[in-house]
Image (cartoon, rainbow, N blue to C red; front, side):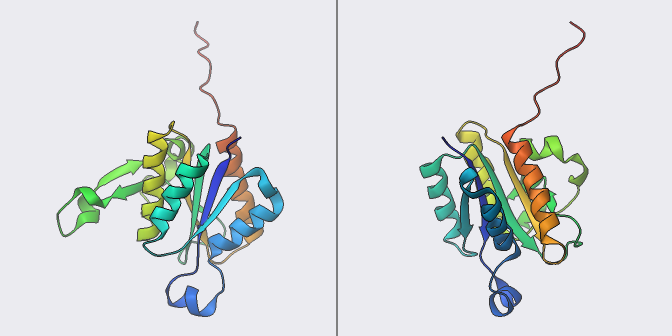
Length: 183
């Protein structure tokens, strides 16, 4: 029986690598794993070029029923996680300002539950790439639900874990289209 895959990242950058032993997303994945055990699949990715092939190999091997990827965001207000509505495919543009003109790939799952964040920007390169690769893999492998959420570095991580659990619940039990009452 396949399960939803939850991913996180290792520490990165000056603050992450020198002053903290874990990325905030890593803290949350550990907390979720303690609470939910083997209910989900878990993968912590490096913040390097190895992340993408490791992620894709894991997807091909495990064939999850959904993907929830997480990354940390230093500038988010501490009270809420941020569900990202889209990722950029920067590989399709040859212009120097690729991100301004790149094709946007939208997660069908996220756009159905989080319309209000359409104007927000995507996170860092690796967050974007994992989200984009996850959506592409999902479309090729049964159109499973895919979501990416940024976790605030500050704030109550128990509340953040509950917010992530709410997303996982929606991924496990998606709301079906309402029946047509006119027939």
